[in-house]
Image (cartoon, rainbow, N blue to C red):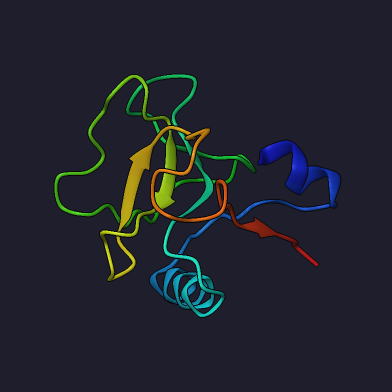
Length: 111
């Protein structure tokens, strides 16, 4: 997902305000998706969340009980069970776990 967004001249989406979160979540739902990854990750150190762009993490919108701090769950996502736009941490699934075609993700362009 990250390489694909970058190949298109963008990056995985960074969500830095409640207003931006609501916009991105609503757009994703309007496009028919219920689950999608965005550019938040803790690949380097479990529990230390970073945006793929390196910008400061000042806004987080975790669902109650998230993140779970599992060493497998390294990526932020909207999850179909959280219908209010709250976030979940998960790992990239290679098969269709939620009834969606493949693994959805959200790219962003700065221009």
